[in-house]
Length: 421
Ligand SMILES: [Zn+2]
Image (cartoon, rainbow, N blue to C red):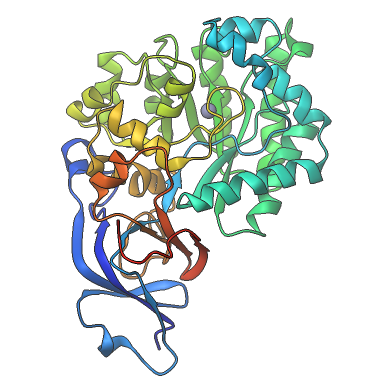
C-alpha cells in the first residue's frame, strides 16, 4: 500500500554520502529530474522519475509538486529555542560597536535573557517557542536542536528543557535537547566559579535521570568558561551519559575545537577564530564543524573560514544559532544564503551542511537528513528551478510545501499563480 505519491517534482536533490560528509565530498549530491516519491506510514518507499502509476493503488493520495524543487527537510543543529523576553534595547549599543563581552560584563547580554527567562511562566515560554517553531517550519525546517542555558539555576534550566519537550509533542518539528547550564557564570556565583561548575554537573545528573537532554554544551570563551573548566564539565557530561558539544573559538582562539575533538564531541560550533592546526584536527575527527553565519551577520563580525575548513577536509554544518542576543531570526533560508554569500560555500555544500551533517551531529542520520528509501519522509518543496536560485533570490521564503513523516504540515498561500517562477 502507498499512502502518498508526490509527483511532478522538477528536480529532487539530496545528499547521498555516508555521514559525516567531509571536505570535497560535500560538493556531491544526487539529482533526479521529473521525480516522484512514494510514501507509506511516514517513510519513503520509492523514488523514481517519470511514470509513477505502478506505485499507485486506489487509496493513494496524489500531490502534484507542479515542477517544484525537492530537498530533504532542513535540520537546524544549533538553536537556543526556549527563552523569555527579547533584547531590542541592546540594538543601539550593538550598532555603536560596543563589544559583546563588554555588554555581558555590564549585566546585559545573556544575563538580561536569564532574568526574563527566570520570570517567565511555563505557558509564556511555550507560547513563544511555538511561535518560533511555526516560523522555522515555514522556512522548511523539520528538525532542530534546542539548548537550555538561560536559566543558570536548576529550576529554570529544567523548565526550559521541559518546555522543549512539551512543544515537541504538539507541533511538527522534532526537537532534540541540549543542556547548556555552562552558558555563563550566573551573577550569584561570580565569586565562586568552582561552586557553579559543581552545580552544573549536579543539575546534569538530574536532567539525564529525567531524560530531558541528549547533549551537554559549554561556552568555552575568554570571560566565560576556560578551556580547563570546559574539559571538567564535558568529561563529567560524558560520564553521566550526555554527549558533549562546544561553543568553540568564537571570539578568541583558545583551543575549544581541540577540546571538542579530544572529547569526541558531536560538534564544535562558531569557529571564527579557530587555528589552522585545530582545523586539521577537526578534519581528522568525526566532530562536525558547525558554522553559524547568522551570528557574524547580526554582530557585524568576521565570518568563519568555511573554505579553509572544507579544504582541509572538515565535515561542515551550517546552523542558525537562533537566540535573542546574537542571532534573533528564524529565517533558515537566510542563514543558507549567508553561507553562500559570506562563507562562500556552494549550494551543494550548503545542502549537505543543513541536512545530512546536522543529522549525523544529532545522532539521527539513520532516520533523516537525506531522501532515501527507508528514511522518514521529511521533505521540502521549494518554489525554484534549482538550488542556485534559492541562494540567489535572498531574504524571501522559497517554501512551497513541507512534509513531516509524510504528512503535509505547511503549504504556502502565495503560490496560486501556477508554475515555478
Ligand atoms: Zn549558541
